[in-house]
Image 1 (cartoon, rainbow, N blue to C red):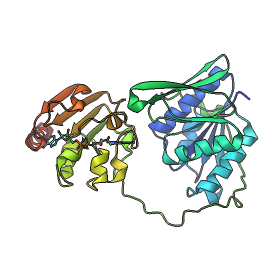
Image 2 (cartoon, rainbow, N blue to C red; image 1 turned 135 degrees about the vertical axis):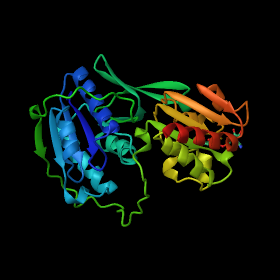
Image 3 (cartoon, protein in one colour; image 1 turned 120 degrees about the vertical axis):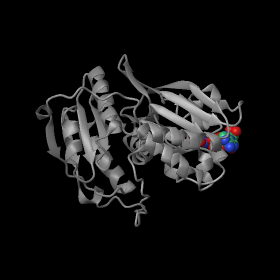
Image 4 (spheres, rainbow, N blue to C red; image 1 turned 30 degrees about the horizontal axis):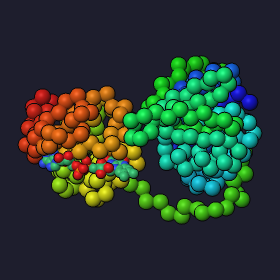
Length: 323
Ligand SMILES: Cc1cc2nc3c(=O)[nH]c(=O)nc-3n(C[C@H](O)[C@H](O)[C@H](O)COP(=O)(O)OP(=O)(O)OC[C@H]3O[C@@H](n4cnc5c(N)ncnc54)[C@H](O)[C@@H]3O)c2cc1C
């Protein structure tokens, strides 16, 4: 009852988020004196299997064809069965839409406790505590997960990867799960947005645009700046809601939590809900025409100017430097 299960969806990873989830599971299991069971759910993924075996004590593969495509009810049924098989003290999931949807439902089915967006996990006198930012990152809540299992989804990049061990030390088992009778709603069609680049959560440099851009066209200029510095594009909710940027670019409380080395906020006001998504950025830089915009209180570098003057200059300078 001191083991830790980490569920990894084989459609994602291995990447910084799955490595962090494995690292968090390793630390928590070591603190509890238990084992790490990495459970790979979905189509087989050799690379994720190898990364898991280098950290976990046991790797379990649940690759029933019914799990190859994410179906919430089938997936939940599989996670419940596997959790009951192992009876862990804690269950960890990543920071993806599947995990956020499944974690509270899984905890409820297992009679456990749940929390999400955890940035730190600790064991105190046998009790598991999670820390999570609240009020847009202005405070941190400490949640004690009283009922077992403790089901927690983790903030991406908040946890360091574990030191890799000899993968031959881990047992690898294929699991049979019965998901045929799961019922419930099924996804019958999927429209996949062309993300084009890698995940925003893993980006080292992000150039983000807000409502002050005034329309979708300026995102093309920001895109040129981003590509000159090896960055990715993102946006505020206002820009996404206006349809100038796809919803997958939204950063903030109800968008993605990012942790780049550089976050350049262009014509973004700096509302607390936006700042909640960038609190882990190492350097924030801002371009805003309003010297009183709150973003300036949170950035290391700021330019008070119309972005239409700054972005072309920046683009020319960067292009010249690149040459
Ligand atoms: C429950 C809840 C959840 C939310 N979640 C999110 C979230 O996840 N992410 C998010 O971003 N927001 C979120 N919001 C919305 C948030 O409160 C703000 O409304 C939003 O972030 C504003 O976006 P913005 O800064 O792009 O736009 P605005 O507030 O309109 O700011 C535009 C900025 O552009 C500047 N500007 C204008 N013209 C120029 C120019 N020519 N050159 C330079 N600067 C210029 C202005 O000075 C201004 O500061 C949420 C709100 C709620 C209530």
